[in-house]
Image (cartoon, rainbow, N blue to C red; front, top):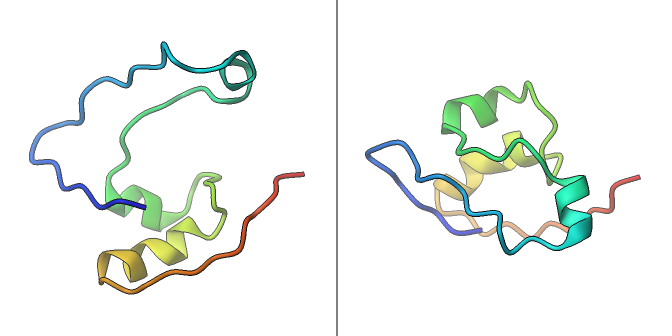
Amino acid sequence: MVRVRLDVPGPGLDTSQRLEFERQDYFGFRWWPVAEVAAGGERFYPRALPELLPLFLAGEHIAEPLELWP
């Protein structure tokens, strides 16, 4: 993960380099405010992202195993 703080809305996402399977599997890209992720109302990858995000932003090292989706 890389931390980025934006003072303005994030730029549009360039999806032109995605592979075919990514075009089928990933949609609805957008920048998320921290509060929305922390609320946990959506499904994220990793699934524990709402719990991990505050730890990451506090500077803690996070060592999560690879999570496979069913």
